[in-house]
Length: 101
Image 1 (tube, rainbow, N blue to C red):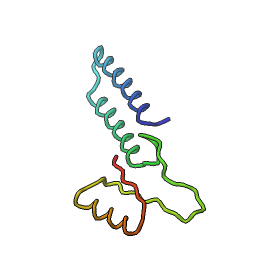
Image 2: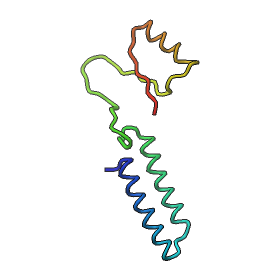
Image 3: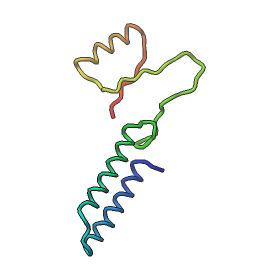
Image 4: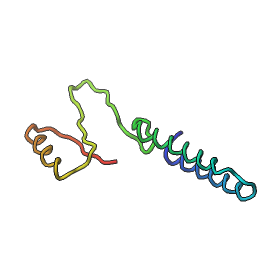
């Protein structure tokens, strides 16, 4: 399963293997660059597609017959905006979730 822990483990083993090979035989620096590039692409995938469960198990949707929605604010608390948002939510009696990644 492609997740952060397994990706780190695989790339660590590959890096050690390449370093050992480089110790005995010359390995082009491009091999290290390519490995880092592929690793970065996989991390980008896991960050961009939150529903991939790459870093942790997430809930992106819920099947329900009730007419409800979930509101989340992903920019985290900021003194310039958060008090205003909280006041509007309080006035309308709306529950919301703040989260930071």
